[in-house]
Image (cartoon, rainbow, N blue to C red):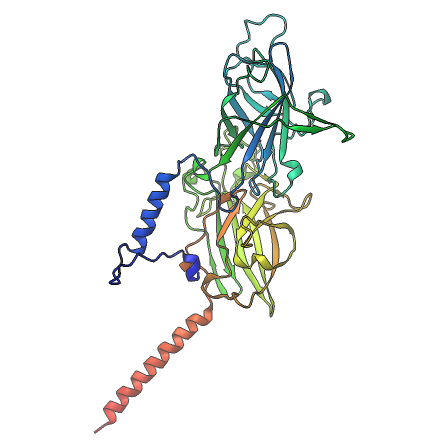
Length: 459
């Protein structure tokens, strides 16, 4: 890759020209300072600096012993969806509250409600766990934006499908703004770990418009909970890798070996194994344990970036995403790539595309995702477990080059998780650079041979 992409760092220099720190030590020193300054639970994504999931509680009415609240979960992350088996939301009550009833969702356990006679609450647990309803529940149990199995699209892909909501009736609680105690210790699984939720904070009450849009009403009380994602809380290993190839080099740069860790190596299945024909092999497990195809990289997902063609004013790239997990397909998948020439995309042939402009002056990041009802579902590992597209980009004559790996992306994310790229020194190189070296070497050898001959011929 070119020097800018290698992220080299210059050491500090005295007036006499001697460096205080070597580049490597300086990088380590800066990294150590950042680790001390930022808590491990804090999540920050430079490609989506404002991405989060916001959970809003609107108290819509007071009851004899509590309140009725509308709970709305909005996924404001540009390219990180929540896939099956969906989100799981938990919290702890501040006092001895119970849930009398719910619409649009349910708790996973009722708890001990033995002290109640007659009207028994929906849940009596101190720390309830709530999940979304599956599609197809009876109409009288539905609520707006509910019943999608906990699946949330990313905000950048489909804002209308990035919201989930339910209604909860809380008892043995406060009955006014002054006596209500906010729930605490919020947790969110989406569907696995990775999210860290902050405390509930009271915000201005939500304002609603009536259906005829002529009258405004507002909630009795509103509080928000913000949850952010950190890939480091999920696993120490990546969940995807990237391989490269090009028309100007016959070699393929594969994913690094054990790019996603080799802890599943003992339980993987070869692609030609007879076990794949066994009933139930594709059935997901409750703990979401993957069943991977045996590969050298052992990643559930591989993204391949192929520099396909070179025209006078354009160049063409083929992108292929392959699923190696036999127990999981990906609905509403997203792929994010960072490359300086993405500001001049001319056409994307089989994917939908949206630029991600986190910073107004920089347009080098974009999100690819499947076309609805065509290839928005990435099937489990097997013959159908891949999706692919081609991208046509216009050349910027000031920056375009095939040298030093410039044609390959700087970063790649799949479903919001960063993928491991090969080392820069293994990128496909231009063959003419090798030819130049060979010509120079042959010229040197020839000149040396001529010099030796002239020495021997001289009297």
